[in-house]
Length: 264
Length: 272
Ligand SMILES: Nc1ncnc2c1ncn2[C@@H]1O[C@H](COP(=O)(O)OP(=O)(O)O)[C@@H](O)[C@H]1O
Ligand SMILES: [Mg+2]
Image 1 (cartoon, rainbow over the protein chains, first blue to last red):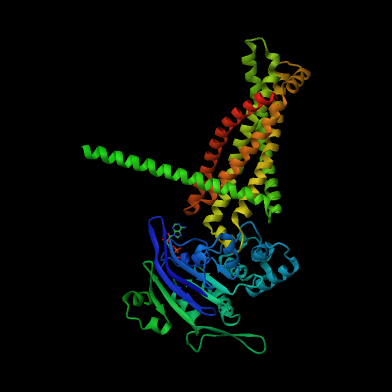
Image 2: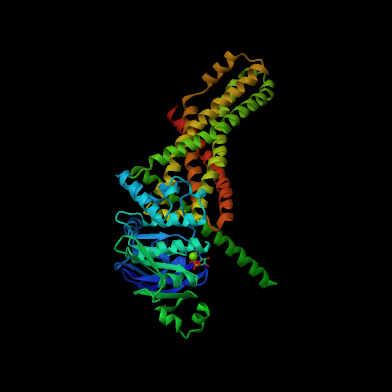
């Protein structure tokens, strides 16, 4: 469970977040909307403890991470997988080393089990062939998928996934592919997810499409019935504040001029 | 008019206070980073593979330029010494002059400056681009301490490789001096080498190896500090690279001044 309480963050003189409070319970999904520069990425980084807020509390399972030392944060981060906006792959490492980084870095890592997990995840994102390539040899979409696979590695695997504009700048086919992966993590693995995006199409897709595992082991993808996933809420940032928080129904019927403008 | 003067005074004062504040902040943050990088040497995990990788990279990429730097510096010293020594009828002392100048001073300093340009800039650029592409954030998100993983190996590798490179520079310099002495000044090779070996004392060699330890630490830590502090995208990486070379060169030269003082003091009191 993640809870932000009145979080304030400034960079120099620029007030980016001026009092943000929300809660994401285990198993829930939240879509964070907002124009570019509204502080969406900043929120995800604060949740991971990659920066400290100026004031306010960030509770992970009830513990305030803003007061933790870096060594304690390392423990908390094990539960999280973050997909960075620009992939943030390690240039100097191969795809295999990137994806397995979290496990290879552990002392006494059993390289065979790690290899197996890396290969399984690369198969999941459809990049088994690229295992020995370097990040510079990959296209934008491939990099994003490697970043996704890297975020999913862990022992045990992370249960909370933070997606920072996972499809921004990609072509529709690749975007669709990545969204399907994200959906199956939510619908089949039951992962908690925070999806940051400024693209409403991505938000609708995440909210309304479904992946179902069929008894014969195959997976079926459904966009109908167009009912929003349960436990899914939207959050719209503007001017460092939460302008809107609620369900899809509430978002679509909001009377707020800014919200109406944003959803067009 | 009075107001204008006061305004200017205020803004100058404000500027100076800001600059001083930034300096104090830098010194504090730099010391913290250095302290943590050193502590990491004594605890697990020590990324041995990274240390060896960087030692290899630093050594291999610098050897050639160090060989050239040393050789030509020694040769120039040989030529210049003729000029200076002829007046006193002491051209035969060329070996002494070349060896002392190189081993005591030019070898360590020139090696440090070359490495600051070659390796320090590379470290700053590499870490800087890791910052702006969020690779540092990704490392932390995946449970790794970037100081342990990135700074400590580079520091250890530079500190161990710089004395070796200095030895190479010294040797090549003396070799360059010998070429000039033998073929231009008509000093016999035997006399030159005997001169070189007899002149050098333990304290000279000790100083020549102690200095690069300090320079290596300064160069690697400044490069890491400046690199990790990079802001403002690709442009920022360029700025960091330049700043790292300038700052680490100047700091190394300043350290050289204090080290010389210290070594002379030590040499005097220990009678080395
Ligand atoms: N490390 C930083 N230093 C200075 N300013 C930053 C930093 N990170 C983000 N900002 C600023 O904070 C604002 C919000 O950034 P961000 O959270 O990345 O926005 P979004 O992800 O919504 O596009 C931007 O104006 C950005 O310039
Ligand atoms: Mg962003």
